[in-house]
Length: 116
Length: 115
Image 1 (tube, chains in turn orange, yellow):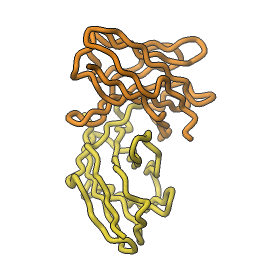
Image 2: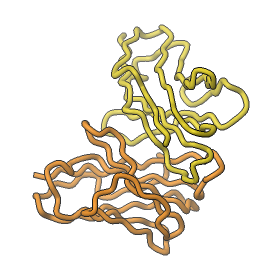
Image 3: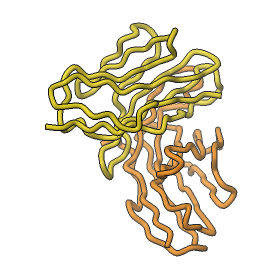
Image 4: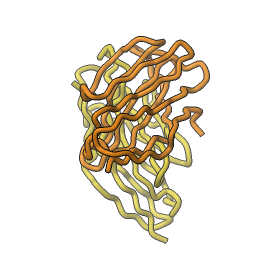
């Protein structure tokens, strides 16, 4: 158990809908990351937050957004869902924004999203 | 930009034999290198990392990896494979000087250990 908690574990929704994925980082971790894992794209970095502020952006679609709250939990919002958005979405956390250190990033178990 | 290549989609090895999962990387500065493992329907579990120092890094479950700067490689190894090692393995890199702490992952290598 990494200490990173993600809900829901599984979600099935229809095209055009909106869903919210929730993540609680490890106790004391300030950085939260979101990754998407799909068969064709592999593991893609979406976005990172550090202590409530956006720190880095990766291949995140404009239909997707995220935020980190004062209690450090994070939510990933996916809207106008398409079939191709079906994937495993991981949240991960690390102690701080380790720009010059080798902090390990710890992953949750993921949220399986199926768009039908 | 930083990138990782895992040249093998799948590695097959018999139980008890040594295993190697290959990884090469590209960064503009010095790398931090990581290995993660993903078991079916599970999240990514951290195995080991190279930050600095000894080129041979030891990690969880008897795995180790050797950092080779001249070959820009960080191959994962285990002296004696177990059937329970069968899983998807990811190599990841972070450029020490990139200004970001995010990891870039390879596409993964499926390790299959036969009894």
